[in-house]
Structure formats: structure tokens, C-alpha cells
Length: 158
Image (cartoon, rainbow, N blue to C red; front, top):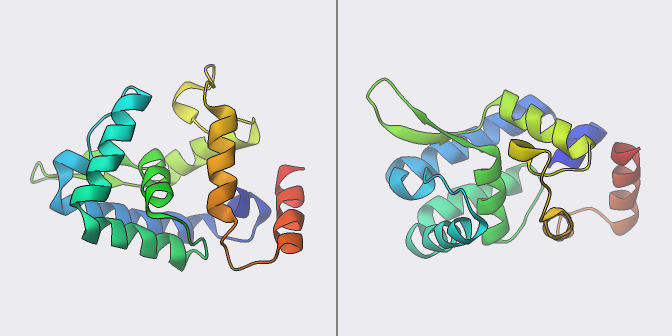
């Protein structure tokens, strides 16, 4: 996603709008699950497993959003990527939902351009290689050929 936005292949506002719609819709039915703050990798893995096991309709919404952006991927990668770009926000009725805002995506883009994929703590990058692998595995099933993907990656990473 970040690579395609950087390459100009995907409009930032369109991407944010699509992901925000999916995040809000998916998290509304189970806010305690989707909006759970996870300070450690182990807790994030547990929350991700809980979402995948208990909220299939929400997971389907998230998958559909990534597919609408021409980035088909696995359910676990789709949910993890969305959670990394979304933040819990309470509305006027004190109901909490995940929201994707342009500023959060811009932070992720800045981190991506510096070689980090976790903008929350740019000084600590313990999972950098693993996250890059997951990111590229998520991109591979996209409906573009390997040469076109390579070309886009070169252009966006230059």
C-alpha cells in the first residue's frame, strides 16, 4: 500500500477513505476486540488471532477494502496491516471505533521512506526484516506482473 502510494499508483485520499470505511465498519460490531491497544508483539498476535477467529464478517470487510485498492492479500495480513494504520477514536456517543486518518498514513509513509515500517517508535526496529517480508508477501498476489511490480518498487524506493 505504502509503496503504491509513494509510486503514485494509488491516490492517498482514496486509500485512506477505503481503509477508514472498512476499519470503522469492522470495529463497530466488536470494538473491544478491534480497538484493543497492544503494547507487545505477543499481545498483538493474540488480538489478531481473536479477530480472525471471532469476527469473520469484520475480516471480510477488511479483505474487501484491500481488494478494492487492488491489493488482495491473506486475512491475517489484511487485518494486521489495517490495525497498524488505524487508531481507536471515540465518537460523540462515547462509542469507540478504529479510524484510518491521513495523518497516520503520512506518518507511516515517512517511516517507510526512512526504511521503518513501525512509525510509533522509529528508533527501535526489531522486526524490520520480518515486516518487510510480510509486506512483500502481501503485495505478491496483486494482479500485476513481476516486472511491473519490480518497476513500481524501484520507482517508489528511489
